[in-house]
Image (cartoon, rainbow, N blue to C red; front, side):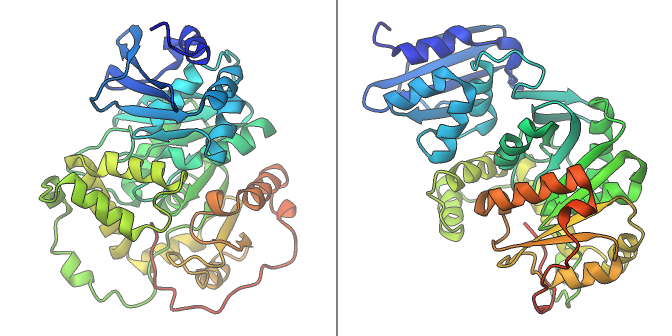
Length: 406
């Protein structure tokens, strides 16, 4: 162990077990220094130790060169900067990987980055939090986790917001009830319970894709608890003909509890389907998806939620949208193929008071154009609709408005 680099030693010596959330009770995190070796940081209950890495699979991996590890040991912002640039790679489990950085960053302030699992009457909900001030709760898309909001948390926590990214039930590190509906009302009940557990009487709510649909449901059901809503490329009820609806109603998502295909096959298919699967941003997101999907309950949740998106009754959805009262900002991607920008016209007709921003990106603005996205969100949260600007956004021709969302 004398060969352990000083930077790694520094991190381990600073480890704060009270700031580290490990739901399973134990974890093994591999710290690899490129060209020098790897060491496993093992946690079991309230005990931890560092030992040389071996050939077994860890729960999470952090990989960087010697100079990058020195930056990481210097401060947590340096670690996040290294991650954004690709100098630091975090694989297998972002909850544990980033949680380790947060627990070894030396920050003990109220607004430090932290991972916490909260207990609600419905089950356990995993969170990633940072910052102080007005709360902004963030809900991820289908197949994603709270980790998709790392860029947003890093951008807005220093601006005076308490950022809270949540793993929806069935995803990430939150509980995965079986069987369950995994539709918008189901998620809304869980998120209301989570707001209670977090002692948040009112909060801003940011939802991406499927999380946007959940945010809309919360806004419809509990408008008095919403300071405002930010709907980022949100899932919307289909307006075009749903030719597979009758057949899909016969297929039970609970069958997903069986997984006939080996992990290698599933992983290969996902990597071929997703563009840029090997990039340092997309690869960890795929790890997060596979980490949940390759569990029986995670598969059921994924299939059930996807099924509900497709089968949602458009009449009920659009009637509910017309009654939405919280101040709302819709963010659209000009090149989004999952939630076509043509939906903007229908939202304007149903909810004239809402504001809109169109960005030159696809379905994931926080990765594709983070600066413009976070600037628009900050202006809206600080100044309401006036902060977005009075000029209407350009609307692309409607293209059938028949896609759902991821």
